[in-house]
Image (cartoon, helix red, strand yellow):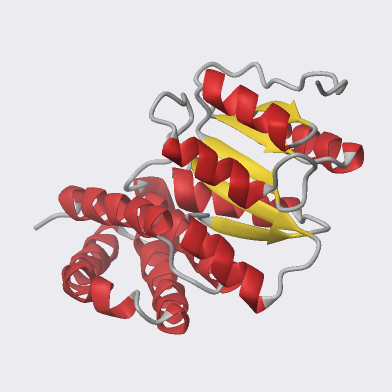
Length: 243
């Protein structure tokens, strides 16, 4: 068992993460940094401990090192997905590795990983990957009138910009599956959408577009979990915008 002190964020309802890595410094760095972002973090020092914890407890996401003793990231995830009794069978999974050649990246994506973080881990990359695949802060408003008024200058302009955004989102709903086939095209589309959202206070969608854009750029692929979270915010924003 790991001898790391537990690092749990006290916030009620915080998402639970399992971080598994055989390097103590990496474990403590991720525990401290992710705890500071509101996640409740449990640590495992190798693949066997990660499997034991993930089978017994429900985690929202797993962050697994590719080359741990006893079982690497791919083996851990495959075992969990094949075990109907595992509490974390459906958890979102991110992989970490000091080297990520294209062959390993393809293997990880095929195995079902929703993101790949190259070491040394940048905490911003990990946080964006989690937000892209699990969803953004629930306290953000779908439409923030104060932010919209600050950007637009007056109510009439803000409402006009929101009507334009609605038309753009209706078009995006119809085109999203096609755009998502091309990661570079999706990154560019998210860049444009963020600007449109910022001009009229569509805060949640703009934020989800940002983390999706970063996640696709770093993962070099569009993964189902991230696209699903974006669709949820897209639908919610369309429902809130004036028709």
